[in-house]
Length: 159
Image (cartoon, rainbow, N blue to C red):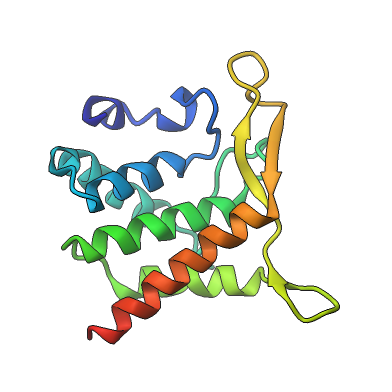
């Protein structure tokens, strides 16, 4: 995984997970769950997230994946940042808060008052179809964002 991350082609090498920041999410989650051998990969993904964050706090996948898939990309990257910050990485609060503000600005509300986010791409058709056949889920994206917001709120209690 460390070698793969160092190749900096993670958005092109994942067969079923086309979002550029899904790998960041998965590596950070594994590291945060006790896989210290992934520290070199985490060093790279933190720099990648910070250097690619847009001024509005969003991050983007490839343009042809759900119109850059900003919500899902930002949600994956935010989860990675929060997990790595909790694991001891020095990540500026403004990078995290800009991502949160972007995501809160994308929130939708149903007529009954419940909130959700439009689903981003969480799975693709694989090798030949990976760039044209996507599965999206409002529930998955909403759960990922809520999980990140919960992580953020828990981190604020410890300050």
